[in-house]
Length: 314
Length: 90
Image (cartoon, rainbow over all chains, first blue to last red; front, side, top):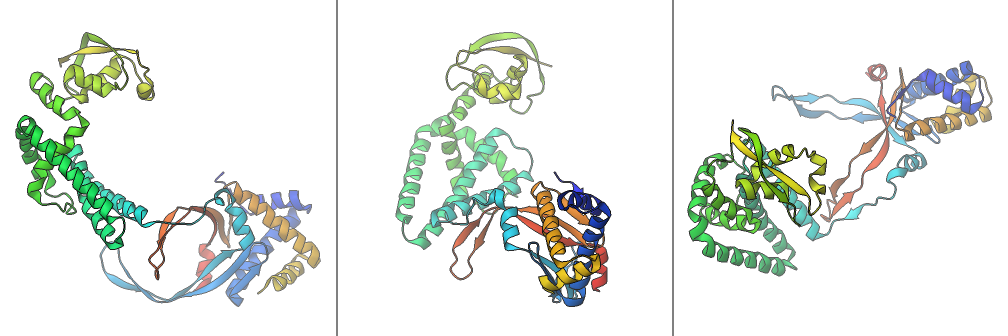
């Protein structure tokens, strides 16, 4: 694999396969490629049956930009050698991938693709800001979703069909969100607003793709967070256990066993961490205390006993 | 230059019959094909490199109909001329 085969190695292989002497094989291979490279220069085209066609192609002048200085300059017209492999050879080379076929992308999938591209774009923009906490991430994710939705709407409108379904879907989601906001506003409204203010500064340079009106954001965020079910309890327990703040997860040492937790269905290290420390962020301590490697995180069976370490400030 | 002309020139240079040369050409191509299928590249000074490259899947748009197509990944035999040969072009 990935070896570079040179003239003499190729000649060796040929003499083994073709029954010629090594010297004759080497001469043959040398002549073979010499004739191709010379004839392509003198005659412009060489066809070799079973291999392909070498051809001289004229390239026209074209403008380009110097990447370093931004200056425009013209690449003058020149000739280059193109190679088109023989159809049969091409097919045989591509055999490992021969089962694939070109597929037409339906309009629904195209809309999804648009969404993906957009979230990709905003993702790359976000990564330049700075590492964010979980909460911010989930908020941004929800923003992304919202940014993507109007796009879907637009593309669906163009299609005319199926648009009604999506509209109803979006409307029902908005309705449900509004209901949740209404119910939970007294509980989390104040905190979320504070957080939103904090985040507003960081978000300022964030992508301009966020289409919804800005005053909508603080409302939408707490609602979006709710389905995860962590945020609410987390907010409560943060208050109850002020010892642990999200930012300083590396400032603790393990001083003993706090409790032993038996895994039930749906338990993860993060949920255990949330349960005992009031934040998901401290799960690595549990993993370390139990000697768990990253591979085994997902394989902890129901009934597995996890020792929860007692943490103290360093 | 077509295949026949190529064959006569090669057989003349190597002092062998046309049939023999044709046979050797096929074996040579067969040998190289095996190398390519193993992922090796054939590199000859003064000529260039012949190697197989993987092209990733991509989305292409039919400019007249606007229909998007997902083109599957493929393995393609590519040729890169050596700098000596490129120099001769000028």
